Length: 159
Image 1: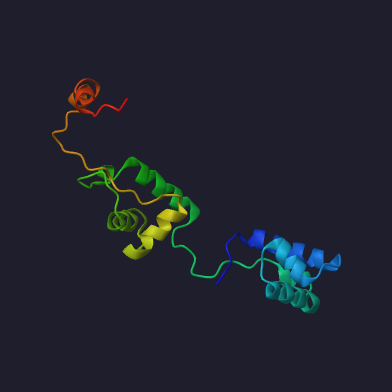
Image 2: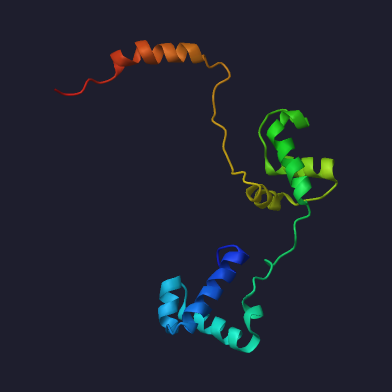
């Protein structure tokens, strides 16, 4: 499993480990200083001795690349910011099937509904649940009640 962090950050950590080993620190001490397992430090050292600094270089993250490029992701975010009703839906709530439909319609790219959440998270969107409120709700009357009547109903603190 790939460790947490960008490739550049992981590469800096490996280079720091090799630097500490060159200074004469023991692998166990280097592992403690960097917060990694001692076996990782020994593996990095063995790779450095056999391959050199090219063995410490960051590699691209595994997995299939996104179907949407950076330009399309920016356009998708603009579409999402306008709201779901602007894209022809009856409510302004974005769901994964709706986002997949918008991507298919605007970009001619098919995404499975189960992967839309991952795409949205990579764009910085988080799942939200709308607050349920009655259509007949009277905000002014509610505020008036809170200011005037609620104080009379509320229990008084013991003296």
